[in-house]
Image (cartoon, rainbow, N blue to C red; front, side, top):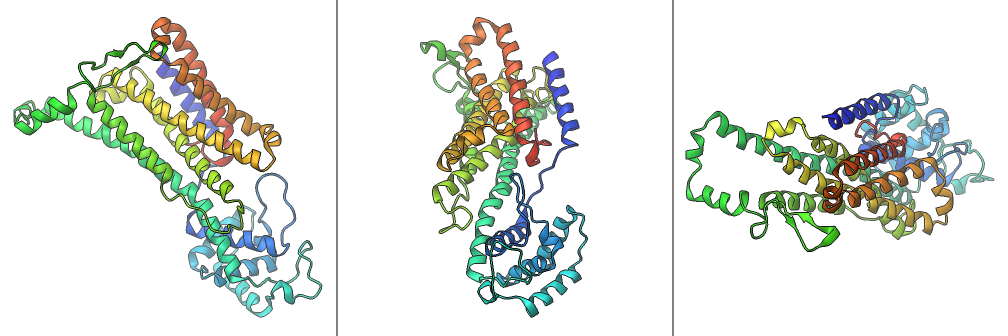
Length: 408
């Protein structure tokens, strides 16, 4: 019970902290259009002053009339100028305390049509100096930037959707268990209705037997330190289904843009997409671990599952989550090495906290082995809680700049 109270306290602290941090917002197609054009225009001319930090400063696309006109014109040139895209520009500019309207943006488009020029047509043009007229877009190049942003930014959105699907999988399992187990409690006569040959075979070969032989909830011996409890056949099927769902979610819609203008090295582009996908998937699954890890969690009463069943699911979800985070960490490390920025990146605070979280997660997987739990359970429990705190604190500080705090 104390562990449940501790976890609840962490959750309340997380909510309080999240209230002061950024909240993740889905990009959507309108954002892909906006960032595609701003990425393209920033390579063709200088509208914005150089920004400090990791995030690009696009405030001039709200404040500078030539930048605004070039942006709206670019959207039109690539066939993406619509009300939704213009409304995204308006929404984006509110963050810079700039109020724009659709009519004003349409007027900017008129200014673009009358005054825009290709850089090659501007006398004395210097890409490094602030430009004083709208820039006409090279359509094929602008479309390439849009496609790149569609893949890159869209990957964040898709990762969140896939993560929600993974949580939905468990919500469905819980719902099925609630209906199946409570229906026979509320309506005992249903037991006789589900006693035909099909249901008997289902119980005989799926829900009741052990995974193999007669080792239901018994531990697999002769592996020394790596002895483990053998789940039932039904539990194994549920875990197996979840594994393939997560695997498919990490692989689905993974592709790179040929001659990507944002990520010229295809290997880095691919690693970045997979790293972001696995990292976000691991983050979305994190609350599920705390939900089912407590001894007296409310889902035990709702589903009528045993505590041992929940702990078995807790372990396998945790192993898969740590694997996702490990892949995320390894791929980003490889990206930093390929870019020659490994030592510099490892000194950043949010990276250090990410290393802390990954290290704690990996240690938990080893520390939670059956052999160690049975040798000294009380020590295991204390160390497990300490490592879990390290995991949450590390993830918290690693993710707070990216808007994922409400998730964890």
